[in-house]
Amino acid sequence: MALKAATVKIYIYSGTQGSYTDTDLKYTLSKDRISTRDNILFEIANLVRDYIIHNFNDDYTCVAKWVTVSQTLVDSETGLEFDVGSPVVNHYVLIDGYGDFEDGINPQLSDNALITANDIYLPEGTAGKFPIFAEGVGKVTIDSTDTEITDSGNSNQKIQYITIPADSSTIQVYDTDDTTLLKTVTVHNVCEPKFTDYKVTFVNKYGAYQDMYFFKRTVETFNVTDDVYKRNNITPSTVSYATNSGQRQRYNVQGQTSIQMNTGFISESAVSTIEELFLSEDVWIRYDGKTLPIIPKSKSFTQKSSLNDKLINYTVQFDFAFNKINNVR
Image 1 (cartoon, rainbow, N blue to C red):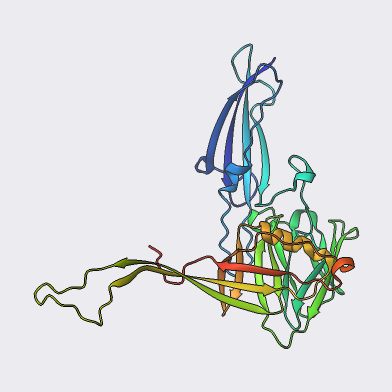
Image 2: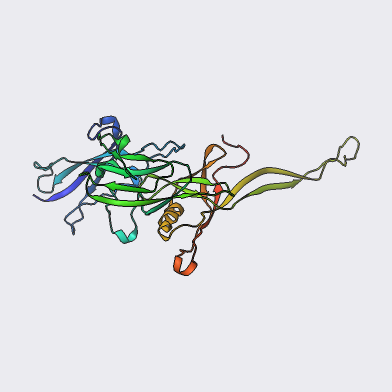
């Protein structure tokens, strides 16, 4: 038997693994084998990613889904489906993450703590959230308190957000055996008496919501755009014009608010957080009691180190992701 062609059906759904129906069929792809190759490749990442929708509203809900791929293989000699192993069915957890180029093709991302940095910063007296992947974690210990992690298999709890109690100091993530330590994160509780701190939440490289606080000086700016036309303001009946009626008239007036914030002094390991923030397509700020979408306006940053820069502070500028005048239609 030799492979001639393959057809894959892609099902995307919520719930437990394998609980899909015909209504969950999103794509059907077919390919013939190239004569010089002995396999057929399908790239489905960009297709299935369209079904992850982030509607974050300070609620930290899991948006993961299941992807089931059913592969039908066709024999080049008979033109019929393979009798053995066809269709081949595989199940995957769909999460909106990415790997770095250095990781190679289809890298295995973290299956435990869904955060890169080993240091996080919270305002004094403020609780936080710590994202983990339930399948690979048995317990999370914050200071001396254990939180047992259970995985029911439902897609809506694959990513879980563990509450970090106010003024905690250490987070330890353990494997499913509850004894193998996988990651230790230090929590820094920042007292900032002068400036207002702002919480920015973004989708990190593991597809989880991650918080980052900006503690120092904040500057808000406002940019206005408009068009102007020259109008005829003569009254024909009197062949005159009113001096309170201008010749130049504005239209299409719109405003854009931007905000520039400073992290305050942080460790070198926090550079990974800044990098993932810059690369994130979905970012929000907690502002005036609301969760508002923002876009990183800064497109570059210089990686700092304690050796070169002594104290490390990053300045980041954001645009609010909406116009000042509501023109949503």
